[in-house]
Length: 533
Image (cartoon, rainbow, N blue to C red; front, side, top):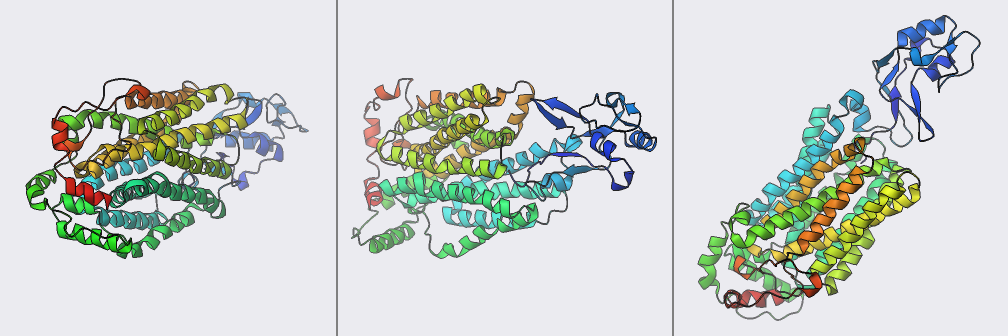
């Protein structure tokens, strides 16, 4: 929003052009739009012709919107030849001293580079989701987390010295890889270390609240530091400050158990019991040897197994679509922010501040309400606000901003509940891979979102309609998901709940016990006991 900001601009008129004041004001074509005069951003009247007219004593005609009264003969500007901005552009410095767009002139003929640059960042996030989940399931949550944070800081620092647009785009792609990999891995690590209400507090409130506060600090930082290179350097500081935390954060005990590293897992659990003044049982993993062969087999699960295993396939496909719909709606709201009236720093702050009540509401709902009802209620609220924007967009700017904030509230609260819901649906053996794959599809949606604004060329309200429709699609798919509220966190695929047939959320009943489910749930009682510890 700030590195790639595109301020108002028009063709640059050289100082040595020797034009009269009348022609300097009139050389940029303009037209009336919605009662306001809009200057052309990509064309000007032929400079050589205008110089000759100015030297001959001619003045712009009063028939032109930009004409001024002059003493010489008048020339009708609408009949003059126009040309492109051969001498570059003059950019407004009202809000930005320098951005990537102004420095590399990503406007007019190179306008296509703006959404492509954002696409590169989101494709980096997609790649990070695709790779980090499988690496994390194989080598551990902790090294992937800190590696991604270091990667984010290094490439953000390098970004400040990018000499050209292609080089900037490549570095921006690598930043996208580190950003989403660090967030998803952190979410999974915290979800697996913490238990019960503490896990919900971390994943549903604490982590998102910190994320929202940092987003609220960003517009203030961008307001004070209006040069994009300096802003890139400042963004490296928080990541570097996280490096000493390596000594304080443990590896996931659940992941260690899934890799048969029972001794390390037991040391972490006993350390936790000691710090929390809880007496740990003398023997924690009684059935470790019995389950060793089965757990070793679970290590081979990969992204393809999410589609290969029958019990996972339908669940995975539905969640992918739900994450995609929320991804395109969430980032589509941010990109459409540029079309709203007002100060961009204030608008971005408000759009970030609304995340605080959204996360708090989702946290309260996660403590006492079923996951399905929570998700559907929030997303329906957001979709309704997006549809109502069509009525207010042109005539009521303040009301439109309020609806955008309500839409962001609903979409974001739904996303927060979906994070918890997804983590509880998948078992430990594939949880990080599944979460990363879902975040990958969210990034597919966010990759499309920069181009969502372009749909306004065909119909002004089309971007808002698409976002609302996709949100409703996610609500319909949620009807088919099993409820996980107050259910044990599954460790194996056999412990997963089955998907449901289409029925109303308030009439849904738990799946019938066919005997097999009961048998599967008794394979790891000691791990369930460890979870309670």
